Length: 318
Image (cartoon, rainbow, N blue to C red):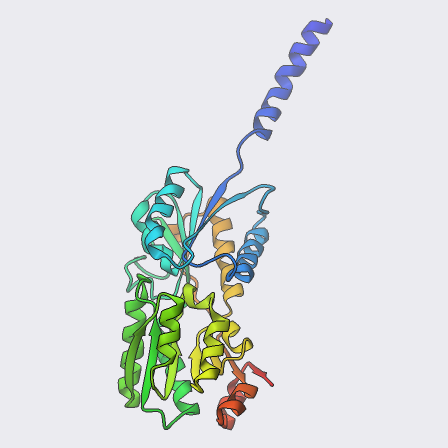
């Protein structure tokens, strides 16, 4: 074979390989209502889940992060931007889910939601979601009632309980209803306090109440230290849905391990990148809930944690 012919043959043979190498890697749109600073461990969990399905950020998958920093009104524009960029899948947390589902019915969406996804109209059923949406349900609506029950065991004399919510979170109303129903069963008076700024959080803790429950919200997760400090300063027994609060000096938390749930979140995003259809991936639900108690804080507040509650605790901070 002449040299010119050989080079032409070699070029033709190499072209498919070069074309394959230049193919763009898939892009995941990560849409979150909170701030990256507060969610570092959760993002690590998400990346671990992707890795378990064979995807490593910067190698064979890219991630477009969109953080609303607690300004939930920014989410629709962020979701629209991800759709315009034609990402392969959108991974949206609770506050971002409505914006994501409103932005597209074609691009697969994986959610991590605190609400019942069937009641919220996200999926047709847990086993067969249908459509372009599936994900992980934290069933936090039901957890709100459980958090109130545990708090009642620890502070049985508490009749007036404040419930701190962020009503700019589009998913908060379902959660509020669950806690209100539980309060009626326990014979407690619930006062809904809204806070979407740090100043409003400060003001909420200055209200005279016997105890406080904090709703699951990305804005609050990013302010765990502030919540714990205010609870101690105002001698207010407080229940939160996330461990970070209790580790930071808060009294109690009851809920799921968010980093682990974000790992499941990442696994589902990876499965969709592999070609799975959201319609066929059943909605995942947590199987473990963590009760964390800070005994040092209980002593400071003058509370004796009942032995039955201590026995159920997954972690006791002393």
